[in-house]
Length: 298
Image 1: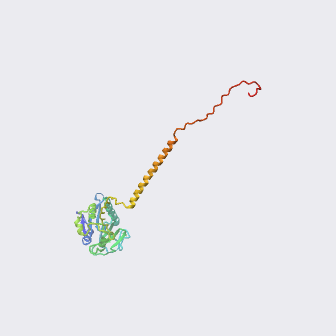
Image 2: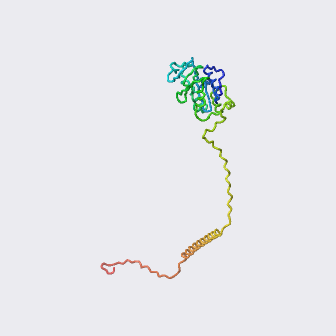
Image 3: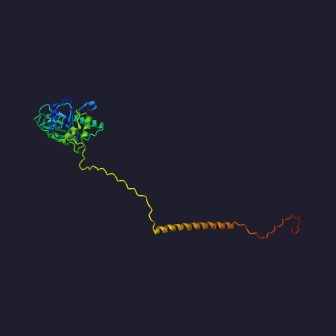
C-alpha cells in the first residue's frame, strides 16, 4: 500500500504503528496521513485511505498503558473488561471526532464538484505490543466501525481496508489524484505510483454490464435513378386513344349545344309580320242634355 505522510507531521506512537501496518500490506491503496481540511486547513484528520473500492477516514487512538481483555463499547468511556479504556486524547469521544472528520472530507470533495461516494469511518485502536484486545472488529452503526490493530496482529484491519465498501472498483488512478489534490495530500501521489500500486488506469466495466459497442456508420442510401418511361403496351395505347376520342366527342357536343342555343335565340327576336287588323272605334263622349221634369228617356 502506498503511504503518504505530511512533511513535518508529529505522529504519535499509535500513528507510527498504524503507518507500519499499512506499509506492510500488499493490497492496493493510498493512505494519506495527517491530512488538513476545512477552512484554512483547521480540521486535522489522522488518515484518509483511498482504495479501488472506496474511501474511508481513520481516527487513530493508542493506549496509555497495557490493557488486555474484552472491549465494551456500550458504555462511556469505553471499557476493557472491567476497567475503563485509557485511550490517548481521552477528553474527546473517538466516534464524535470521527463523524466530524467524515463530514469534513465529504464536504470538501463535494464543494470541489468531486463525487466522494460512500465515505466510511473507522476508529483504529492500537494497543501496546504483546497484549490482546477482543473483539478485533465491532460495528457501531452502518459505515462506522472500531478495529483493534497492531503490527503483530492486524488481520482485521487488512480485511476492512480491502473490502470495506462493497461494490465495483470505482476509483481509478485519475480519480484518486483528483481527490488527493482537493484534500491537499502532501506529498501528492503521482499517476505512475498509483498504477504501480495496483490502481486501474480507467474504471473497469462492472460485472454483468455490457459496454455498448459503437454503431457502424450507416451506409449512404443509394439514390434512385430518374424514372425513364418504358415502351407503351397495346392496352396503354388503346386507353390513350379512347381518352382522346372521348375528349373530342365532348367538345363537339358542347359546340352543338352552344350553336343550338344561339340559333333559337336569334329566331325569337325577329320582326313581327305585317298584316291587317280591325280596330274597334271608341264610343262617343257623352253629351249633357237639359231634361224637363218627368220627361221620358232622360
